[in-house]
Length: 128
Image 1: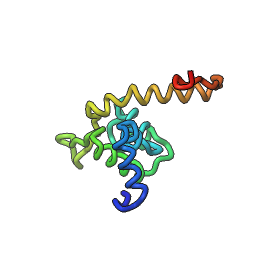
Image 2 (image 1 turned 120 degrees about the horizontal axis):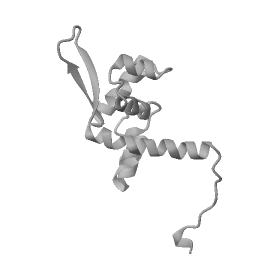
Image 3 (image 1 turned 60 degrees about the horizontal axis):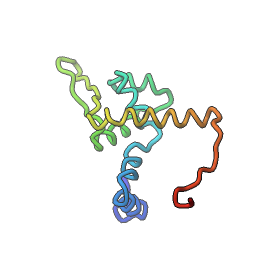
């Protein structure tokens, strides 16, 4: 959604070239994306089900986040046969399936420190 001449776009491209980690973080960044992926993984694969499971998200934001995830091949939108009007469901690709345990690990990391795990300074290997 950014202009290709903007410094934000240029910096994002530069960071993606330095390390794929930056590109991956960019793909899943967004307030709702991790919850959308996880909910589809749990079987909430229709637009109305996602709206029910994600209180506070607007239809516009959900549609935009789903489209961005689709553009990054995290999920695909499939038509449900023999439905009137035509129903759509969202299915995680293998790329999306591979993302689920990573999101789980991030969640557990966040919980660990939110629950008061002590933060300590750890020496760098380069300092030893």
